[in-house]
Image 1 (cartoon, rainbow over the protein chains, first blue to last red):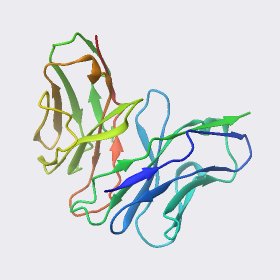
Image 2: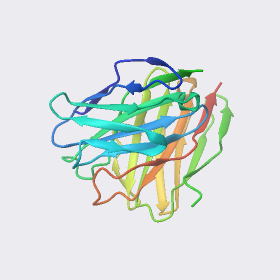
Image 3: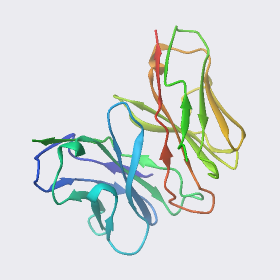
Amino acid sequence: AQSVAQPEDQVNVAEGNPLTVKCTYSVSGNPYLFWYVQYPNRGLQFLLKYITGDNLVKGSYGFEAEFNKSQTSFHLKKPSALVSDSALYFCAVTSGLDNYGQNFVFGPGTRLSVLP
Amino acid sequence: DAGVIQSPRHEVTEMGQEVTLRCKPISGHNSLFWYRQTMMRGLELLIYFNNNVPIDDSGMPEDRFSAKMPNASFSTLKIQPSEPRDSAVYFCASSFGGAIKGDTQYFGPGTRLTVL
């Protein structure tokens, strides 16, 4: 069965500092990995995904994530945090073994607070 | 494109009443997903359709929940009878899906359901 862990419920970072939001996964077969962001009272917005190829994936709003197969991790990073990045971040995984590759499993979410 | 459209945005009802949530996916998308988000359980996949056909409904909590997709541009999630524990935010998402494994899912704004 697929699973996703986001070990930190909350991450606090000062504006201008680099940020990291952690994600580890467990899946049978090749993983397809995603990051989404949720602002208050809004739906989830897609940030980036890893399907295959370069382990460093660049996405929206200056975010990037690095796929590490040996550590089964897909941490989200940004070199310089903005106050407007404060939101709830979700990591999700699905598997190439799934006939449709559509059965996403989401992590519990990490609340990012960027302090001015 | 208008994105995924959900209605209503907020629904307050009394226990025992029937509730119908509606979703219009992004035009051209072949897959549609219903999720439920609660503080206790996080984001859970309830059911997903591909080409209007239910593919996986293993996440539907019980027989009180049903979902239909009569055509490519409309889906409903019905709860009958509703109970207070059904209170949650319900999201609809869509993707091109089908043969494209790991395709990005795009989320609607959600319906916040409160059952008194």
